[in-house]
Image 1 (cartoon, rainbow, N blue to C red):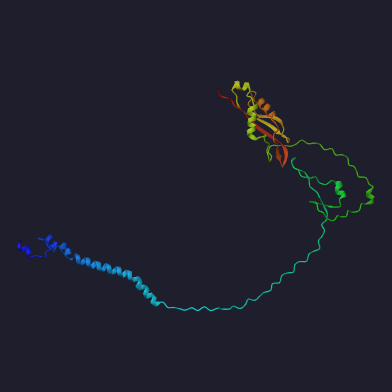
Image 2: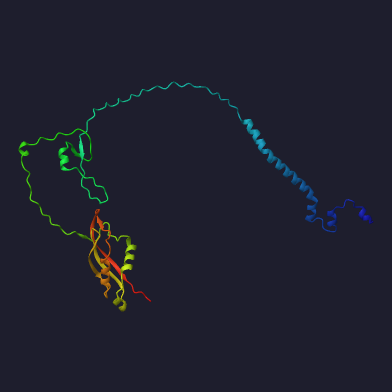
Length: 278
């Protein structure tokens, strides 16, 4: 073995690495001081961690010294009794002497209704004359009223018979627009089925290749019948006559109504004659 190596028993790994190199370089110094730096850093970290853990306990013990114990004693306090107030109730009203109602007989004003509604007829003049009751909105049982005495001078007089009045019957007005317009029984769909079933395309219109709409004007009377037919706008070639024929054979319509009663209404119906392409 070399004698020089035996003279250096404490040679470290850093000495071997930096052998023959400049040891004044910063890396050699850092390697020599690394263990001391790690120890100091460990001690500082442990100390800071311990201080952080102990701070709450130190703060709590410091606050507990400043707290003061206060003793509170509860006492029962007796309140004076409340004054009782007497409430004077008003005296109940004395019952009045019941008044016997006056006897009445119901009189109904005439009202326009449909045939399906049951009509309650008002009393006749004979019933009103024989009954000693006043006229009111409903029948009431009660005391009968005393009728005034009959004048003896007028008892034997005969009633004056007036001459009959002749009333001329005026024609019913024909409306163009009413509250409820007339309608074919079954609606528009039933009306279309009736026209498709009964309407025939005139042969002369087929030969001439003529088609279009014919506007038929007619009046739906108060009983639903059709009258006063006319063509307001036609296309000729027999289509106008065919439209009038079909409309004249229609069954009765549902009449129009104004103020709840059936009236006559003029109605215009367009009928289409369409050429079928082969």
